[in-house]
Length: 113
Ligand code: SF4
Picture (cartoon, rainbow, N blue to C red):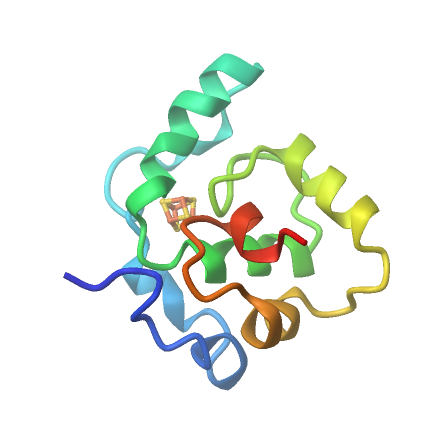
C-alpha cells in the first residue's frame, strides 16, 4: 500500500493535479468534504488521515486559496491559520517538497517548525 511518505512528492511540481487519482475521497459523495461545523469537519478529516496524497492535496488547496471544505485533512480555518503563520510561502507545493519533515503524518505536522 502506498502512503504519503512513499508517494513521489515531485508530482507536486512535475504534474500538478496528477495526485487526484490517488485521492482516498475520490469515491463516494464529494459533498461530504464540505460539511459545516468543527465537529463534523473533524469527522470528515479523519478520512484524510490515511490518504496517500494528503500533502499534495493540502498544498493544492493552499496554493489555490480554496475557501471551503476539508482538503489535505485541514478544514478551512486551519488552512487560513497556516497561511497567516507562513505569509512568505508563495508555493505550498514547492515548500512542502523542499521542507517537509521526513516522518510527517499529516500536512500540519509536515510544515510544523
Ligand atoms: S487528503 Fe483528504 S480531501 Fe485530500 S484527497 Fe485525500 S482524502 Fe481527499
